Length: 187
Image 1 (spheres, rainbow, N blue to C red):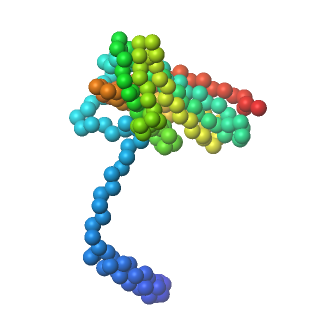
Image 2: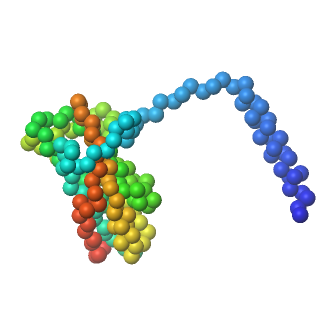
Image 3: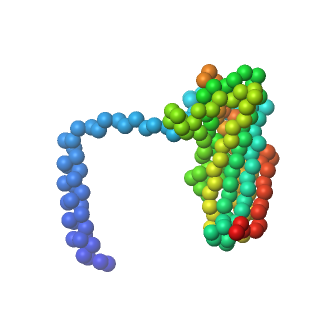
């Protein structure tokens, strides 16, 4: 048994107690408002619908390729095209996409969406221009593990689309993903 541990810990305990005692009389900090970058907050009571219940279509694509800078590593490029099926213009359209849960275990880039800052993303979907694209990519260390990356997309993807006068939350199944694997590294 090490008999020196309690004596060595005593100064740290006294310092912590002094710091805590000093904090007891400090005024409470003002709450800080957190600015949301993408429309990722889901209003209470909003339940996801299925894709066939909403006025949108999606075309999700996953492209797996070798990293040109490190050919033993890989890049997963994700593109989701969202198309309005509405007959009227949807103004100020924003979206958030939660990739399948297993993707979140691989990368924090499994949540993507449009920037809510005014002037950063101003999109109207019209009958003449009904589509917008959402993109992300993430690196993975070993290209030989590409099948594990692809398998991570075998779950539902959740999408929230918000526009002036509308707000929908829906899911689409893994079967909609198109997957392309590029074996050769680009020069």
